Length: 164
Ligand SMILES: C[S@@+](CC[C@H](N)C(=O)[O-])C[C@H]1O[C@@H](n2cnc3c(N)ncnc32)[C@H](O)[C@@H]1O
Ligand SMILES: [Zn+2]
Image (cartoon, rainbow, N blue to C red; front, side, top):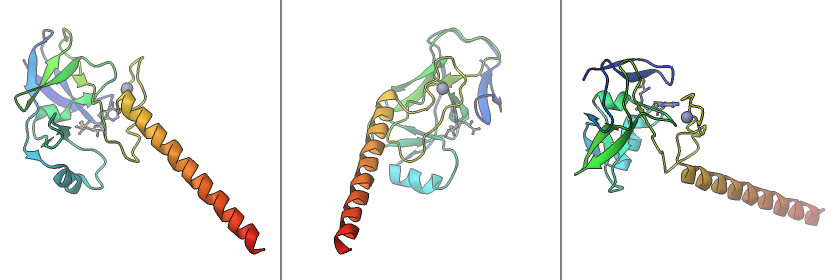
């Protein structure tokens, strides 16, 4: 199996296969040192994109240092990830033809101000790399924040009126 990194229509560089890959194949491991969330925040502070993969234990994060770290997100992906004994593998969701770009669904969570807009171009693109649950959570938090600001503004108006 041959994998190359080259420019991608999805984002900057992506990973392409130079040979066909069979469904369910273990394609490549997501390698890199295991670091904490705090260290990850330090390392990637102010950087436009990251090479991080959160492990199922919710504590450790892989700071990607291999070819798998260049695989882009797609909402209609041809790969998925599987964590086996603390190691993460990129697996083929279907037969993949030579020349195709590899992709998996990042299913991002723990969102902040960044909307993580998706440019995958799939027909079913959900517009963001966050999970649907995370999107709902972020929408709810934004609505609550707006409600809070409205209440604060209304209270301020009452105070101003009272001092007139
Ligand atoms: C691990 S890197 C992937 C490799 C990256 N394309 C590069 O050239 O270094 C992850 C970053 O790529 C970008 N990315 C990956 N898939 C994307 C997509 N579908 N839409 C928009 N940006 C994407 C995001 O900025 C994300 O933080
Ligand atoms: Zn998408």
